[in-house]
Image (tube, rainbow, N blue to C red; front, side):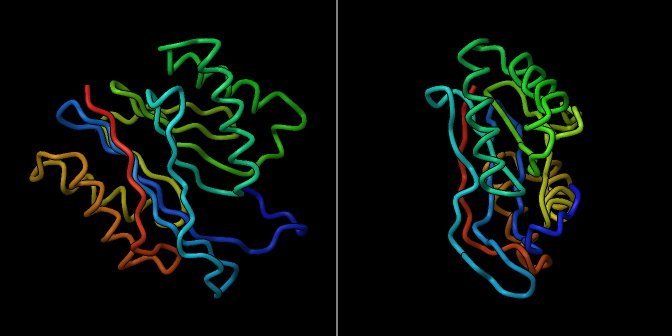
Length: 184
């Protein structure tokens, strides 16, 4: 994401998605920071869409993320039970539409079978190992979750532990975790 001079130096999201044992989980912390100051500790960056059939976590500018969530919801109505198609269509619009291409956010989207990362440069990525993460502490959560995959059978436990580890390392991540899950 590019830093525009009209935007303050906002940080503060860790979102991790884990798919294991027939369960898809997306967890996110609640911290929003402006520079060295914590502005909010209880933001909710993980939501359900499509009547609870899809979960999504977002990182980046909140208003931009909500615009993308509304567009994704419309795509899911257009292509019910076709998460990949809806996400690819959203990514295509996001990349080509003059208004949307200025949006600064990323999405982690999951249903009972799939996890996808969607970016503003047109990427729709499915992780090979069933783990993905975005945001300021995303690399820490991703590393922790990958390490736990071999030893922990439950996706929710992996996501919670990964978020705890990310929160202990990343100053832009707190322990106020929101978690949504779907069972196959």
